[in-house]
Length: 250
Image (tube, rainbow, N blue to C red; front, side, top):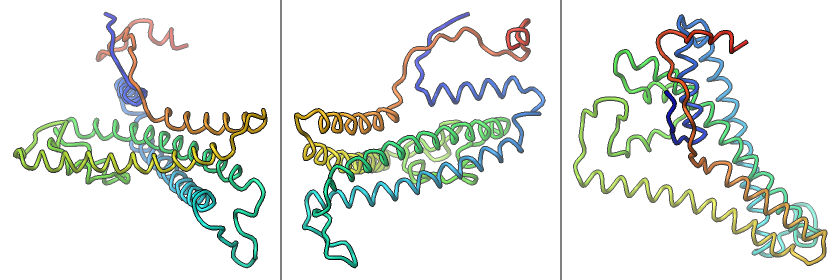
């Protein structure tokens, strides 16, 4: 029987992988070999993300120096950054492109992590264990965020229920951490916006440049918003495949 369900892209991916695993009755596909391959791909995604993040930090710092600092000399020369033609425009474009790549690489890494977590949920379910601890052993995880939560285990029993003081203090800590991360985003947007403003002109070429750079930054932010929308669920996977399922797949 069909019903409606509001899902974000990440939740939809998780539930789809869960249903795919249900179809793999004998575990011939979704097994430890495939799990290790996903771990390797997730490690590559994290390495790519870290490299892009370093590039973004460097370019943002250089752009901030050009926009707000003194005319810093390039090592080994008498030429300052502000003496180079179109320095602001070039650094603004590079900063925005790096920001887009960081955003997409972060999203990609989160998708791989979502799949890995489904493997561990299946492993932990039979013994009513917390799969987060299994995932944390295989992938790099911001484990302090789990430790700060008022409810440590979302999948089973919480052995130690915190009091009001713990919940208030560490909930505030998580809120402050999220605000700090938002400030990092605001810093990039501020620097990029200043570069766009410095480059703006009513001539069509600068106008097109500024529009393109602004669009890149907007898309980079929206890519990780992950808003939930309504999906129609037309089938609940049962213990046995539905008649005609293999025919439809072919």
